Length: 316
Image (cartoon, rainbow, N blue to C red; front, side, top):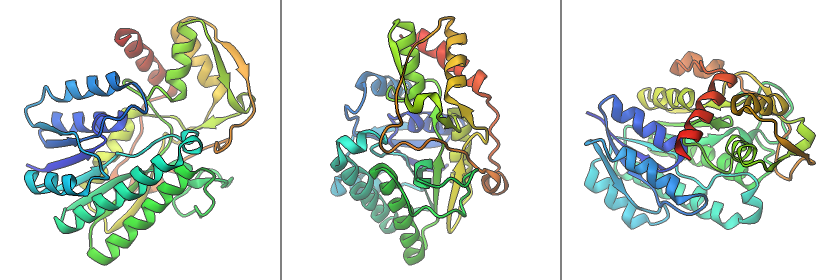
């Protein structure tokens, strides 16, 4: 039986990944600091669900606490690492840059060091589609240059890919970086568009629509993302990067229409300019992930939004 360390286990993707691993019979050590970047209750309820599984144990540890992190590796005899803990959010990186330096750089180095000293079998980590920055060559391919990030968040994710490459080269640790494209679904992050829009429409409040609604995103349903994460954990690679997207770019206006249809109510809209750090369009080329880890996203935007709204109404 494989023992997985999932960092960010109280987070959105970390929770869903942990649950899927537990359902198939693996042992999961969940690690999270449970900070208040967004509603702590949501994080605690995700953990409460995971704690119903006998093969789940939880460690409330900060990635920046190297001594505690070392203890976790020692005590739990970790086989594989799934590092999903990070300070997320493009816009928040403009307000609070030092949170990204701590979590995404120092914390990432700490866990790489543990992976090295405890000789883990595989190290999979979250990167982001935001590394593509000012690239306008669509769809984004792993072969494209990613030297032009336009947010500190994106810069830290690019740095993670470089750090992982160094550790793979020097210490022969298999590492795989996953560039996630706008993940959404039940138990999602409250700072993301789907959550914000749903809450505002239900409460009869106005929604802010950036870039005057001309945004395009490769929205990817969380279950599809998790299948890619697990495919990467099950297949060791010396050093790899994969795009995990839905391979279908959706206009923000259509995305909002789907939410309105699912709720049965029209949104009050406030059109605004493009925000600093945001890119107008994301689009994923997923051929490499299909070929190498069997990644095959199946959830349409209409279906995914329906699932989320159903969850939102039952949860709140």
